[in-house]
Length: 178
Image (cartoon, rainbow, N blue to C red; front, side, top):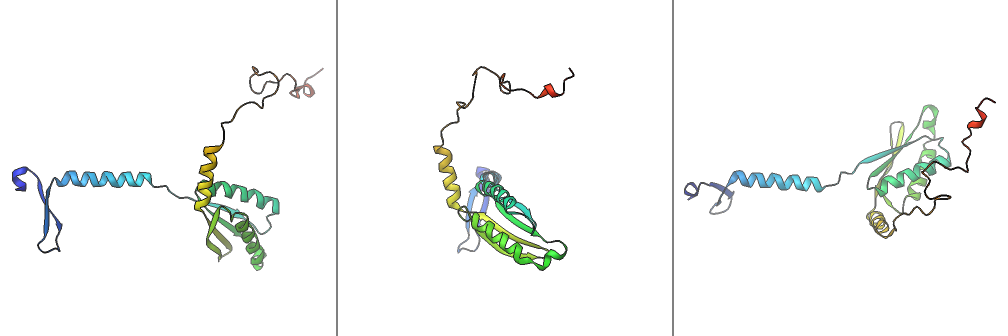
């Protein structure tokens, strides 16, 4: 029957009693399968791991800056790996690095979950945070409700081009010869 129609006889379930076969165009079937797989791969989101490096001597303000950048990464859907690198005699005080990582995890607790507890690997201590589902949903809702940005904050003449204010001095007067 398959030869009469110019199609292929494909065995679908060889272990069934009796074996199950289908009459189909096998080349077209394979093409459609690969097309579906390609489409499924296209819709997947690749999650990247962003690394934030620290040292035991990193100050509080610097930790705040690192925490803000990690927050941006987490809200974008990426995982964040904090790494505290110990050099020389710093290795004898892993408690300092552990306290830093616990502080960062606490600051980012509202938008992330701890995927890997702080772990000592050679001379570095690392912590892996993954974005929580609640955070991504909250950001998506916030983006939908934020009104469009307007340029109502410009001062002076509305027709002036950006960067050209007659009120301000460029500071070139100091460099000019009298």
